[in-house]
Length: 304
Image (cartoon, rainbow, N blue to C red):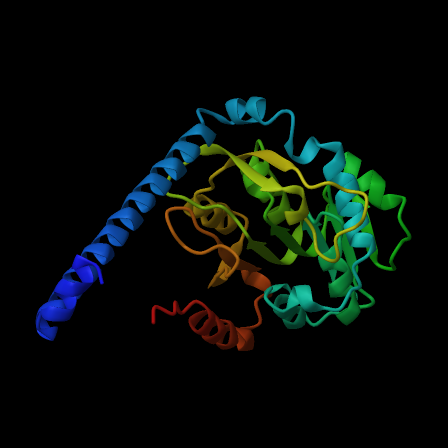
């Protein structure tokens, strides 16, 4: 028996327990300090990364993202291939107010313009419930051209220019990547006969510019297609000011009837909302209580 064990055996048990407790507490204190140091280090790295991605202007953001983003050839081919293997099942509508808006319009051949609708996955899900509808996806020339070569789905089209008229103008996750987002927003408002839906936006208190980075495999829906390697994409991005969106909608005769949480983008300094606007002259009086109740229920934030 060595000296340490001999002392432990001879000492009263309460002394041994006290020594062990102090030793354990020192270990816990060391672990907490190390965890705090790691957290500080990680926060500093995140802040440094965020600073590196900030841009002075929209032109600066575009210049720095020139080699990637929506003009990357591999991205468009990947989107088409992934959409080709996805089976439409209506699931994309479950967390989306578009179906509720279309149901309220109650028109079998409802016309929807989806600005920035990628490979039309949402449109295919929508047409399952509204088979007589017309769903136009407005996309960049490269992606629209590729999708026009794919087998055509009845009611679904891919176009380069926004249609002059539709019943519902829908835009999800697109305005923040445009050079002139308010111009596109105004054109969408002008084209919509009855309703406008805006979601997956990028709001902030002031206009700011940065570079957004994501992986290729984060794009699209459905099983990953074979023959593609994942890589990092960089997009120029800007913030939008929510008050300006509402003001322009009012100017074009629309009233906001729903301002809801967007579960895909938690609130913070930069946040997203699901917004529904309705032309005042076409708003059915008996629908107003429904939308009011819906907004109150879905916009409630769960803080517990």
